[in-house]
Image (cartoon, rainbow, N blue to C red):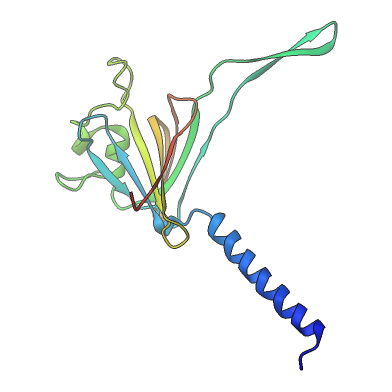
Length: 190
């Protein structure tokens, strides 16, 4: 006959395993293997090109400016300050810098030149503004849940492209003409 202590240990270990599985499925990190990143223009339907990340990464940073007002030297009120654009950093695999017809390069799509010169700026509100594209991140992690999350970094304009031949990568930095990313989460079964 098993002892009370061994029964309790078995139950506790089963519960820990159950909660561990719930935690892992609810809070799984983004796995780039299940993520598709595309560059797209503002036409309907949009022209798109898939970005191969390889050993790279994509990061974006949302910020806001808060002004603190004093009353006789003491903190009093706060107000939201000027808008701050979303900063984006994208490190992707360097296949080719320039594309050929039917085989566009990521750099051409980001710049809207050469094989992507007919692409339409995604910033359609100002026809005189510099060319912009959208970066769309779709994470489909069906191994953990039934949801698909789409993050759109709209009206992105590149500011720097650093080419590293030995690492076969290109680091792109820039900003979006928006204060935050557009994030939509949907069920893949719908």
